[in-house]
Length: 448
Image 1 (tube, rainbow, N blue to C red):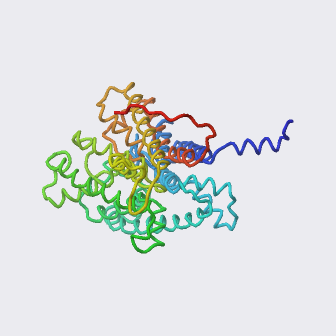
Image 2 (cartoon, rainbow, N blue to C red):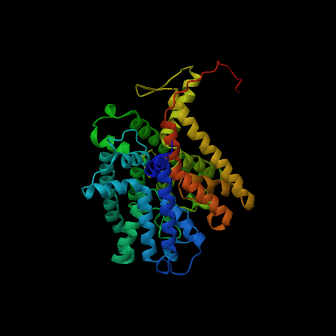
Image 3 (cartoon, rainbow, N blue to C red):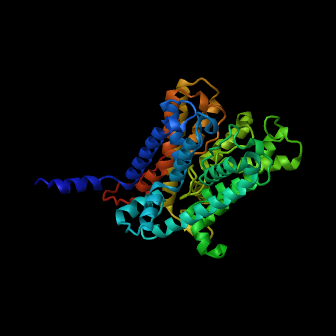
C-alpha cells in the first residue's frame, strides 16, 4: 500500500537524526560565514574563497587556526562577522534558537528539545530549557566582566574605540575557547602582564569546564553533593593543570625562543602558567609555538587531544573521557569488572563508549597526518601538531597553517568540523540502545 505524500514527507523528516540536523546547521553556518567574509566590506584587500571558507570554518568550530591575519586582513565589519561566528559556534546554534523562541514567548517543542539535547550532550530533554538559560547567563556575564577587565589593558594603549573592541573580541574569543586574536603575534606582547594572565585563562577555563559542571556548582553546595561527572571533571582538570604548568617550565626554562628570553623566575612561571593551561583548547599563545622543543610539542599534542569538558566550548576527547580511560586501566590491573571513583561505580558500557570515542579520535589523527603529509614534505612534527590542533579545535600552530595547499586546507577544515560536530554525532549513536536478540557462544582471543 502506497503512503500519502504528506506521510511520506513526515517519515522522511523523521529519518534525519538530531546530530545530522545539527551537523547540517553548522555546515550551513560555515558556508554563510564564508560568503559574508568574502564581501568587499569585510576585507581590507580581496581574499580567496579558500581563505574565506577556512576562516569561517575555524571560527564556527571555535578552533582559531588562521591562514590570514585577522587584525589586518579584515575590516571592523569582517571582524564582527568572525565574532558572531565564534559566539554561534561556541554557544551552539540550537541554544541560540531555543533562547530566542523562549524570549519571544513561543513554545519549544519536543523535536527542538531533542536537537538541543544532542547539541548540549544531555540525556534528559526536560532539563534542557533550564540548562539553556543557565548557559546564557553564564556566557554573557563572563564575557561582559571579561570585556570590562580587558578594557583596562587595551583602552590606554589603543584608545576607547579600538580598545573596547579589542577587549570585547578577546573576551568572547577566550570564553568560547576560540583562540582568535586581532594581533599577528596573538598575546605575546602581553606575555607577563598580570591582568592578561588572569582574565584570559579564567575565561577559557570557565568556558571549557562544561556547562553541566557550572550548573551543578551553582545549585549544589559542597563537594560531596556534586555529581560524579563534575567531580571527575574538576579533579581531572586540576591534575592536568598541575602536571602541564611545571612540565612546560622544566622543558622550556632555558630555551631562548620561549622562556629563555625572560630574565626573572617570576616571569617564566607566569608565562608557563598561561601557555600550559591554554594548550588544551583555548589556542592563545604568549610565546613562539614554532620555537618549542620537540618534547614540549609532543606534550602539547597530547594535551590538545585531551581537550576540555563535555557540554563546553572546548574540543578534544574531553577530560572525563581521559580520566575514565585511566580508571579502566587501573581496574584492569586490579582485576575489577567495574570502575570506582568518589564512591560511585561505572560499568562496562561506559568504558565501551570511552574506548569507541578514543579509537575514532586516534584513527582520525593518523588518517589526517597521513593525508596531509602526502602533499607536504615539511617537518612531520609540524604537520602532526597542526592535525591535533585542528581535531582538538585548539588553534595553536607551529607555522604550518600558512603553508597548506588546497588539499591540506580541506583536510584541516574537515578535522575542525569533525572535532566540533563529531562528538555530537558519535554521542547519539553511543546513547542509542539496541537490544540484540542473537547471542553467540563466548570465546577468547590472545591479547598482548
